[in-house]
Image (tube, rainbow, N blue to C red; front, side, top):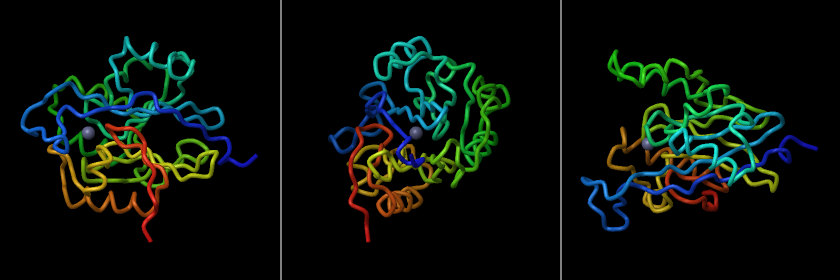
Length: 220
Ligand SMILES: [Zn+2]
């Protein structure tokens, strides 16, 4: 059996935005609490939770409902980037390895105040190279800067042969992807558009940061 056939992935939560300009909503005002889209990827012995979306006390129920797993079954928690809504549940997994792209670690290390409560979390995260780092068999990081400088998704070929990219906030929703658009809080809008172009060229299936997955007919 090839490595590709061993990779399985499941969507844990289908996220939504606190405000969505494609629904006619004003980006200056939050209309609702945000929920990020999160996924579980399994390859060999690795069980990787990508972007724990809910408060720690809610994570056991989510894992049970969506994957029949317990907190102790998760071997790695991977944060695509350090925004709060993509790591609400991080502390529910004290035994897992916590991973984040190295460029993202550096960016927030220079940005957080010395006394920020987030500093303890940041310091526990293991930096992994943002591009082409194999965090489990067949699962590699893909640097997709713009939303934040260090954001990196995860790319792999699933058991059906599709190239899947868990892109997180490199594409907030399908509408943002189609429009090559950043969110109101994006760091660099030109880089956002370039990262979306890369997704367009390299992914068959895209899991955005705050929407369900969708298919992409590769450019070129
Ligand atoms: Zn974000």
